[in-house]
Image 1 (cartoon, rainbow, N blue to C red):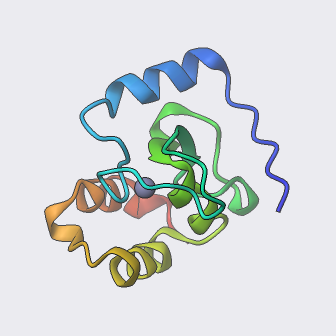
Image 2: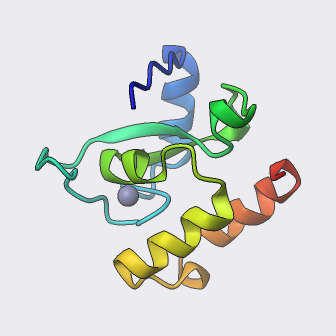
Length: 108
Ligand SMILES: [Zn+2]
C-alpha cells in the first residue's frame, strides 16, 4: 500500500491547525502506529483519493498514522465501524459525527 499522497504544505498546515484540538480526529488521542512508531500527526483524505476524493481542505482531516494506515481506502462509514470496534470509542462522543455529517454528501 504505497500511498504517495502529495498534500501541499499550505493545505496541510491549515488542516492541522483547524483540527488542532485533537491529536487525531478519528481516535482523538492519537495512537502508536502498527509498526511501533510513536504518534505522528498526518493528513488523511476522508474520501480516499482512490475513490475520487480531492486533496482539498474540506476533504482532509488531521489524524494519527495508525488511523491513516488502518483507514486506507475505506469509505467513512466502514471505517467508523472498524474504529469503534478497535478503540471502543463511541463516535457520538467524538468529532467523527461532525465529520460524518460534513462529508455525508461526499459518500458514494
Ligand atoms: Zn487516530
